[in-house]
Image 1 (cartoon, rainbow, N blue to C red):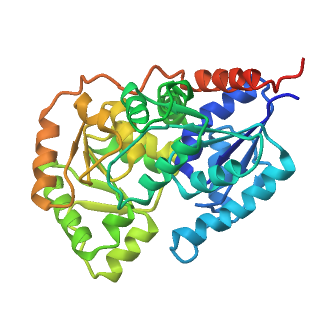
Image 2 (cartoon, rainbow, N blue to C red):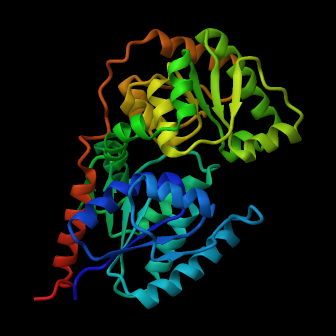
Length: 372
């Protein structure tokens, strides 16, 4: 039988990074189908998002939203639904990306079924901070996978250090480079009028803030907001803050005041956000994907965490860790702004998706799954 790939995702960052692989598979007429777990799902926003990125409709859409914040129940519910689909659809490979609950649930479901091989895109990332649920998800997924697509040599070395055989590991580059290169031109013409006007009106910085460890603690969130106030003074320009609803809810719940110069705006779509990233003078974020995109676009970045699973961005010179201390955020902002923007992109040449698809097809051939 022909190899059949189930590409599974549940959040918009996963769609962004798997998008180039999906388009590559479609162009090659590969036998694949999509499962959207619905982990971060809004029917209107998701359909627009998939349309903007020119991606096919998922064959299966689930309602996998977190209802009570308990990770075990969430993973279990997703796993049960995905397992049923895999039994019925009988793929040869399950392809997942990153470190979400969807990734762990899909990998667990596939691992317990016969004759399904797990392929993990963006394998080998480590923050070494077990307080982050994403760290547990990515470690477990890596050790269940038969194909580990490491974005860098450093990530591959971490996998080998954990005892994963070299034969399972492929260094492909990061599909985020493919995505940025494919979509930045589209963003310049496809961004909304409001966002294009924002970008052209005056200099600005850009903020994202959503991680549980940052927004669920009053003292941590208060420290970050104070640091953002100092950063905007250092920048001499406002900071645009497309605020996650959950973050705004915590700010209101904790009765915290927003500093002057931090301009809250509604969440924006991917093309709008990419357009804003490209035009920013400084990005302050707790997002792993935004760290990568900032580094690729050569925009100075300050990470609002004490650890990162993207150490390549720091080694390249485009990112600094600041944590949640106001003084540290101010100092990091000042230091990174004083640097040039001539660092080298450490995440590859923009052809990671081609390498991943080729490796999947070769693996299927070796497993004797291609019809004679």
